[in-house]
Image (cartoon, rainbow, N blue to C red; front, side, top):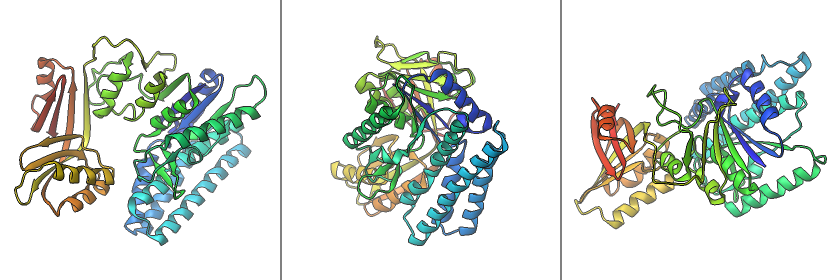
Amino acid sequence: MRVFKFGGASVQDAEGIARVHRLVCKYGEGPLWMVVSAMGKTTNQLETLVQAVHRDQWPQAMEILGQLHEAHQARILPLPVNTTDSKRLMNVLEDWMAKLKADLEGMRAKQVPYNCLYDQIVVYGELISTALVSAYFEIQGFVHTWVDAGDLLVTDATWRDARIQWEETVSKVKAFDALHRGAAPPNSGTCVLTQGFMGQDAVSGLRTTLGREGSDFTASVLAYALDAQEVCVWKDVAGVMDADPRLFPMARILPSLTYREAVEMTYYGASVIHPRTIQPLQNKGIPLRVRSFLNPDEGGTVIGEMQDQGRFSPCVIVKKNQCLLELVSKDFSFVGEEGLAMIYKALYDQGLKANLARHTAVSFSLCVDNDPYKRLPVQDILLTNFGIQVTEGLSLWTLMHQSDKMRSGLLAGKQILFEQHLGNVDQYVVVD
């Protein structure tokens, strides 16, 4: 049993969809679960759509919906299929776009709050993507089963950052897998195709999302439940790198990482793997391989239970679009345990993570993702007890296991608002 995860870049166009089919045929022998993300930048478009509906900008929302429709048509039209099968693919797309429009109209009428609205709508990226990939697989004669991830992954109702309910999820995944494999012909490979990034609230039955780039985590959850032999994340890069090659052209591939190294990198913001991906795999000793779908025969990066000899690979992690919140108690009392509890409860309730924090006698500074739909509610909650100064246009630089010379070179010319040092990890809030 293995789990493959294909991100948005792997299915961003017709060639990508056909390539995924070829990769699965070549490397996907035996029982296989596939997790597929939304196509290309669809999630970004859907987020813009949600914002338009939330602001009751219905004409703009319908324009964005039309653009989404056209973008998906452009992706599937060049697929190497006959006219009848091309119409079949178009009908699949039309059906899902109609469902999306109906959901938009229903939630607009109910005035669903933003974060809940987000989860109900943004998941359509994955649903449409997997429906089209599934239809293409069927046309090519590739036997598989499509399943809605909402029927498998049980979560709480923390919109946009839902928590997995592990016992219920494992039970559902195991039951579905047993049923699926039991129905397959003897000695045949079996394949299940599902969506990343999404689940379903156990109480309300509404859809939830696991956080941006959460498809990696979906693959990890499934692997845990299935006791998989391996998880393979197929990306447009050759493996995990010691820096973002878009920012640092000299970035190098790391051929192997321990779970501990990978956890550190994802915790501080390395975007190649979702932060919650590693722990379920580590708990069962399941290796994670990051491979390039452009050069699939290359080894990529393996993350697993290699011997940890205290050797860590130097790396640089840059988180863009950051915001600094500086909180000062209004009565100039100490920001003690009660104040900290209030601050962190507001962050938790709104699903906003403190990427870096600094505590003084009467103030508390937080570097957070500049997501106004999470940040502004936090500020509204805390304004009763704190004065708040907001600084936008920042990045958070994390330098891990770097020499003094490398550190000086990387930060040369940067305006640093504040910094924090802990062992071999140095963090800097930098003005872009």
